[in-house]
Length: 117
Image 1 (tube, rainbow, N blue to C red):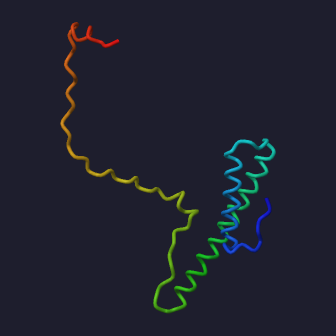
Image 2: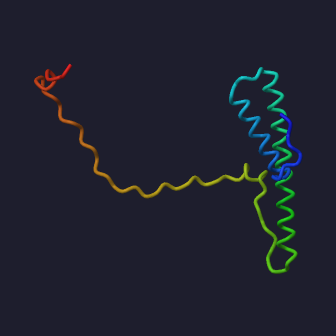
């Protein structure tokens, strides 16, 4: 599958498109082990390329925001630090108090004999 070099999506769109193709091929389960490993290696390379493209875009945005003199540079958390920073779990919404369920009454032998089958 050759990539179209004249794509209007740009380099990041091309990376995402190719990664999507790789994931679909791997999930289909029709590749040999060797082919799967080759696609996986290509996917890892593409993920790194995509991260670099996003990092460059982030730097450009920071520069644009700081150059106008009106806004401070954009402060985004470093993804490398995110793994080390614990995130508090989401707090559940307050549940309405429900009365405790009462167990069903025991059945008599007559009721058990009325089984329709």
